[in-house]
Image (cartoon, rainbow, N blue to C red; front, side, top):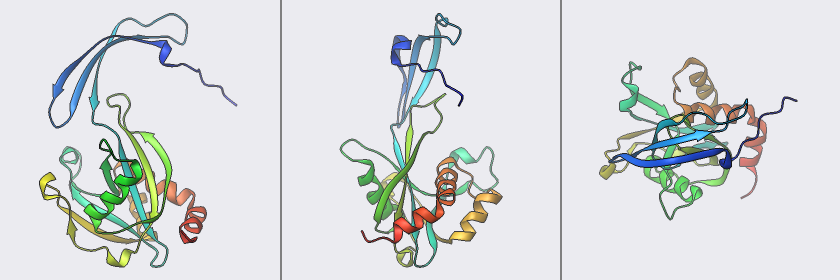
Length: 208
């Protein structure tokens, strides 16, 4: 098996940090050096990092109806490359101070889709774009009753306008394959589900 080089935080020297921008999110500027694969240290490097905290992404599934509960909402960042910037997504939310990742899953499920959850389980975790942000996203799968998922939801104070979608499992697989699901959290959540389909469906069918 190919071995990867093992570095630690001790192999990075941060010489200066400053806040470059503070608004709804924060941008930090770093001056640093790091160890090189060939030995020695890099030259001094300046990098800006988008600091937006960490988040959860939730894929609710109903094994009775064989449906996922997905959502659709407007995303400004999609306008540059998408004809339709109202994206199909999984439920997601930032992990605010005082909340666990599991707390946020339950809160966002109710706020964004009006559903409750059982059998909640973390299935994977990833860095969303480590070249430019520190954000890590934890992916969860949970059981829900999709029959109550309907309508438009979201927090008015956060200007959310979120449409709830009940999506058959095979339709979601098709959306994954044809690009209708085109954002990282949704793709990763669905890919993980379909790669581990039998195991996850069995776990969601067990007694809580």
